[in-house]
Image (cartoon, rainbow, N blue to C red):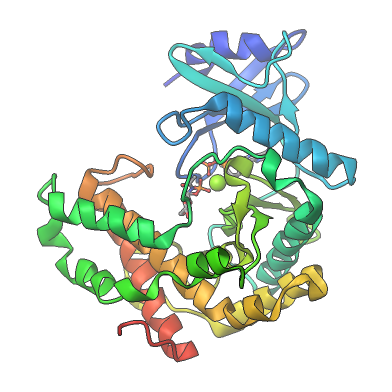
Length: 349
Ligand code: ADP
Ligand code: GN1
Ligand code: MG
């Protein structure tokens, strides 16, 4: 497909006095359509916003501008939203919504922890991100995806998809569904804690996987935290746990051979060390105690979401083949059982 031609009218809205020389699909995100745009003078990231996931582009971009402006005021490197020629933060073209970011050069993203140091650095980067946002006005943010990490609600969504079995796929995943069902009473510690005040509500990133950090391949240091679509009020345990579920695994999220997938306690400890180095004593004792549970919770939640999408016909996450969401679910459930063993969590009561 010639994306240069396909997106010509979109690019004309953002780029003047320069000539686009190439447009190609970029990155491994599961949600938006991401393209690297090369011009004679610069590089950009063009994104087609996933309108099914983010139906309100105005509110989405309003959040992102607020957060990036806030970080820039603190001299923290962050995404730079490129405006359209007439000053808008996104444009609507051909029935889609498009935005542009400056391309952050000399950066890489990792699909798994290639070394302990990389993962520790990512812990420091996400911890710093959370610390920088500790005085951000949470009330000024739109709740872009309500109940994003409401795990009991995610379980109900799973149950609905299970009962509907609208694609006839349940017969391929009864063991996985059963594994999740057995844990249905173990999913509410964080939502309960937020409700009764024992866990503080903070401004969190909510999608802290390793490929949402741009790293400098030469220095091994984080350049910027990206994918700010889901910055919303939440728990520190969501950010901590989601990083662990992705980065403390010995394999990629969609490794088909689950024998290669293990929860690695050394990676867990390295991330925790980096995260706490950044957060200092801002972490409460209740949060510290629940860190292993947070890792469990975010991993089973994600496994549940992949299975829900598999049962519903792959309408949410981008997939490359028909069983992709099931394969992803399996890696998460393998990690869940190992996390439970390592930390002695009893979640099947
Ligand atoms: P998704 O919401 O689909 O995950 P992301 O915003 O995370 O989309 O972008 C997908 C990938 O594109 C990232 O993992 C990263 O590799 C790359 N990317 C995104 N923004 C930039 C940027 N400003 N500079 C360089 N690479 C970027
Ligand atoms: C999605 O957008 P991306 O690929 O960084 C998803 C996360 C999941 C993750 C699983 C908005 O993240 O919640 O944990 O896939 N993002 C959204 O890999 O749903
Ligand atoms: Mg992403």
